[in-house]
Length: 203
Image (tube, rainbow, N blue to C red; front, side, top):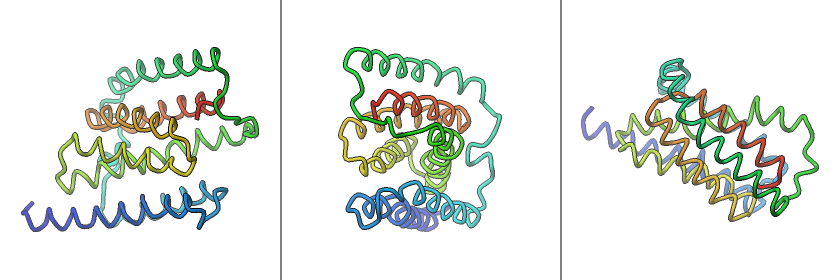
């Protein structure tokens, strides 16, 4: 791939990030779009990214939907996932819930596990890393940018600890994904941590 083609890929990347990852968050944050529409926006963004995915002609393997490295990826992500769960439970037992999430019912958690977590990981790890790879970004930059964008989407909750937590866990997920390129293990970790964090009112 020549320098001109790399520059073109990077220009496409900037456009995708600006319109697909930054603009919707700003519209929600500044209440131009109602907060209650956030999950619809996520689904619409996923549909738009799916269309772009077809234009790029990414394979399922490029997007992380593969059995390759599945076992080792699960093993590596299991410890930080378990450690994060234990820390949240200890914090909850010592200080109680930070945020009242008692209005969330079973349907919300089912949606989170079956739709929201997979979509978020497709958007913030699978697709982004595939586009980053086409643009020839360094692995450390892929991890940093994906983590910043993943944290940034949580700006709509206007809660600094949530931003910090999502950035840190985004780095851990990004490092795992950069090493093994397997999305299934990250989706599992995301689902577990998200459910626990919301259930005990930590995010």
